[in-house]
Image (cartoon, rainbow, N blue to C red):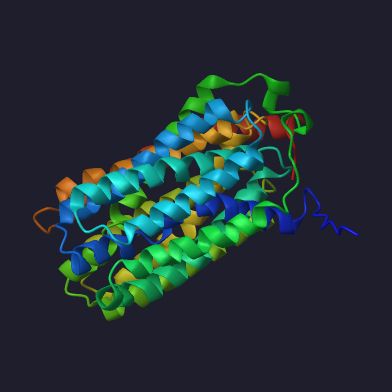
Length: 391
């Protein structure tokens, strides 16, 4: 007698499994400081080459996420997700044996394409679940929780075991996600709830929301990819930096938890404006990283607000189209930002100074804080008029 495990399509378990699926395609971003530092210390890559490996990986993800926009309503998502997970595991295994900078860039670029497509597919499925902000909250909860373990434990292992420790961690995560995939409901397009405005996509606020996602992710990842080296440039040691990064990632659990609890209960405009402002302040504070307390506080604060803000920003994109195309497009904007940050940073920090990089990140965050007011106020207004789902 065959036994079937039934998972409630809107329950906590399914939100966690979707979070694992989406995280599997981009988990390397959560341990990016460990990867960049490992490439520099273990394989002798230059700062520029290490940063470009990160950029190739995430630009590949942007290409994959864009491809998902066109695929998600044309193919059944489960077999596609399974093939992509197998591809990710294969590319991570190959990466263990690569030591040439150009080969590593190309290998990670291909890995990124598959990972980005998986994230795009996952975001599209998340858009078909009720209370989309809450599901993105679970996503950030998983990312920051396990990312904290990664950035705390992996950097000290890289000098001993090389980059293999980093890529084996990614393989393990993808394997767990693969096993969870078969427990998820079908989430067919035709069963999805209606989008904002009864299906008519409002392109102007959507484009602004996508730009907000890009700026926010570029600003944060440009600094985060080099945060270990940044700390070292101010005289801090890896023994001090690694635990701080783990703690700051776990602090992100607070931000993700707040999204799960609040959803849209207090609207989107003021919570997002306030949290982005805190991110801006913490980023500026990195100018004073020689002070251990300031470095600690800035990283912890960014950990909390990063999880909080991006969950809302991605949720805003998803609400414009419940079939999932705009959620996948939000994933594309996110990955383009995540890739552009390290790429720009790789050229700014070649001399070992981080002053200009911090200033540019601060300007990008200020831009995000101001322009996201338009789509958030629109959605809050539609909530009040009863045209959108209310948490």
